[in-house]
Amino acid sequence: MANEKNKSFDENWFADILMSFAPSSVDIEGKTPDEMTSSASWKAFWISTGAAIPPGPLGLATILPELMAITKLQMNLIYKIAAYYHKQGKVNKTIVMLIFANQVGLALGKQVVKRIGRRVIIRALGSKAIRPIAQRIATKIGARLAQKAIGRWIPFVLAPIFGAFSKSMTTDIGREADKIFSQDIEVLDPIKCKNGHDANDGDKFCPECGISL
Image (cartoon, rainbow, N blue to C red; front, side):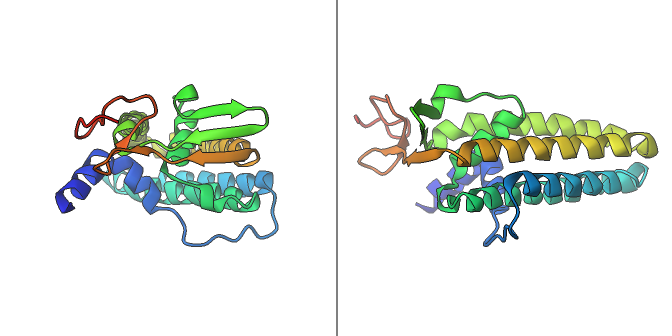
């Protein structure tokens, strides 16, 4: 069982890291989703702008702390918007992946979301299904980190540009979260085989152990 859990973490490391930034509690401070998004976006701007000012090797050392700070800020924003709509308990790994995937231009579409009238059904993905999605998002973000590394050698020129990019990204994430949580959401848990492995709707056999579903 321990080996199986470790394998799941290794294969879904990006999704697990994102969820590790989930806040234990949130305070919406009486703000609307638009106000919360605007506030978080400007915080992201100043975090990235400030982190990009130190030049050369010192600047390179700020990339990971910047990424962690921005990710924590964005995850907090997602949970705040969910709390505003009284849907904090519905936030799960699939919804977080859906929000980040839409932000980086990866449309999951019918793979995750189905609309019936005013109701939105979100099918929670199992670990095997979520793995390639998380990997594609990680690749997109990895490319952005490479750009930041280059930019650290000309900091005073690119610092505000990176700040504006983080601001735009955070705004997009806030809007995606608002679009999802403002609707009537129903979350469907993954299908499980007799051995407890996650499977996907439409599978005839478990993708992990091969048992008939």
